[in-house]
Length: 107
Image (cartoon, rainbow, N blue to C red):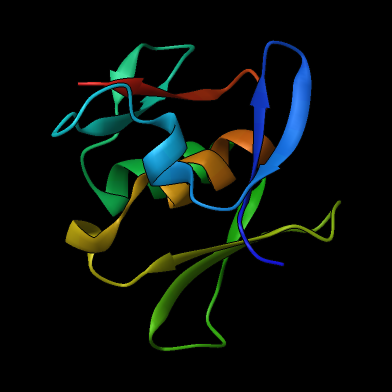
């Protein structure tokens, strides 16, 4: 079974097709927001700065992916190399692994 773990209203659950279930309307785009600063993440450079400050380190094992690992956990964030392919399922993965730091919003 594959999907993304989603934390919503105090409940964590596995969503197999997060794009279909979580979009509130056709054509609505999702954005990742750094909640302490209310900043929309618009590039991997922005995201890497935020994740680094939280203890995440770049992981260079796969040249096709941008990956981050946190030493204190077994978590691994894997993202497509091209930011244009950064989808809501990747955003929700970041949110679940960094509670209260990021959230996904409709644009």
